Image (cartoon, rainbow, N blue to C red; front, side, top):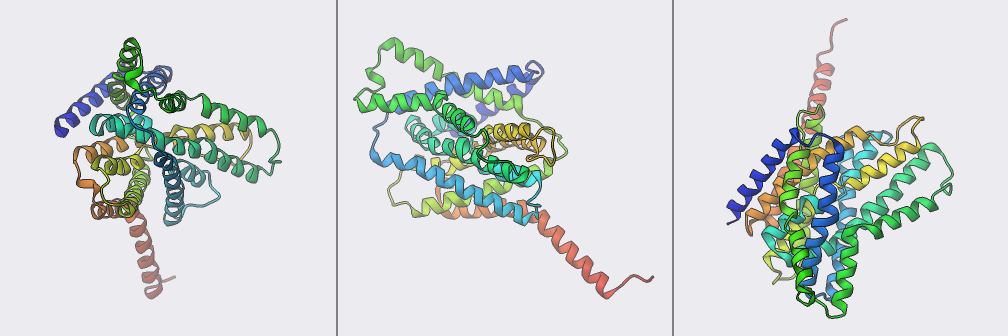
Length: 369
């Protein structure tokens, strides 16, 4: 069943690739993305939330997601150390802001609903509130801190309006609205079956659009042939490997009796693609520093990472979901994480040892003058 579903998903992605010739402008792609994130995905999450029993224990989910973001931020710092990235460069700051972000809406949720069911999607949606706090607020504060530190500007200058706009963005996002509305309805004892029949039908029809649209969108945005592709793949392999290690740690700490669907959710959620929100923060900060140098962030690098992150995460998540319970074993996750990390750091290690050998040869066999 999982194999056939995966093949059908790949067919839709290929159709999306073929549609790239028809969907050529950024405005058209933005329109498809807006329908997914503002209509289809909120409808799906709304249905999923109204079909589960909310308990106080579920309030820990956003906290766990937030902790995962901070751990991934530490993983991003470790990658920059291993890659000998200069901490004063725009590339360094771009990686630190982009790597720890998650965008489960486009890369993870469609496969959770298809492979794991509505209950798992509801749990993922609740966890995503912690991730949104990290992506919308904490990463913005980090970006602005770098901006003020580099430009030596007064930190109190015109920040209250920006924090207010961030809060409004968090509140007004459709996904967050439906989460709040669904929780309020559940608190009053209203579930999905309590809604009028026409309401149920309308929401279900909106929800049914999500998976096909997301898969077509992935095909339309995937890009290949960029000059930075090798370096970007190193970054994404490191990010995915570190996420496997985080999942292995969390699963090993959980008590026995957790459902396989929940364990798979723990594995796939951190494999979500990089989020657009850090890029939005970078764009805003670079605009503040538009006619000055140095630039705070490397926007070209950020765009390329985003373009590759979505299809790469999709393939990994589909593989995990289609493999059944294979990836819920902490040992398997540990091995997968180490393999991915090894692939990522191998070029750095090779370069390092090559330089060491060259220095030794120069020392023992000095060139004649």
